[in-house]
Length: 75
Image 1 (cartoon, rainbow, N blue to C red):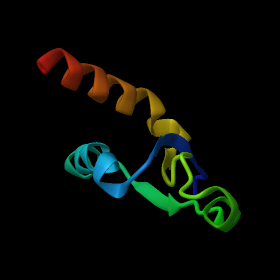
Image 2: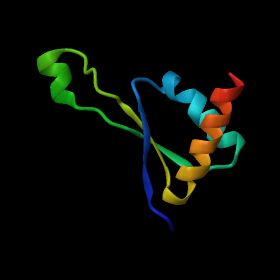
Image 3: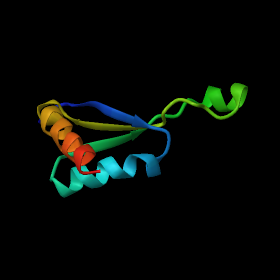
């Protein structure tokens, strides 16, 4: 089993949806992790740090970069 590494971070799951939809369409395995620092909410109000982390296998980084580049060209 390959390890998963952080590829991108997002404030909300809605923000991450474009990437996760693309990964699903191209059969790229990914994991979503929710990061929450409760101290930020208690002492500082809402955290401005990204809360959702998209992780993919290291072997997929290059192909996902190409997919995003192609998508950017199309847009």
